[in-house]
Image (cartoon, rainbow, N blue to C red):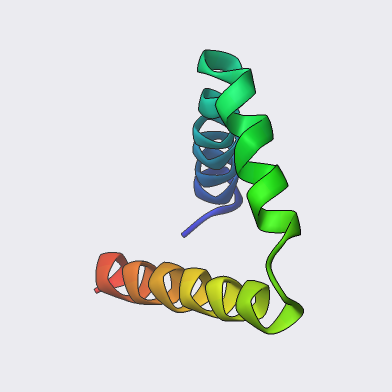
Length: 63
């Protein structure tokens, strides 16, 4: 995996992250309002799940 591949992956992440605020800014705002009501432990749990899913996908695609 080269630096070029990492930059391509980052570009893809940025495009995917930008879809919701571009397509539906009000829904994006509502989602963040709901996230603000979560406790720290709940947010950490979702972060951990995202990290593990990303790591699993990375390992699966690296084989």
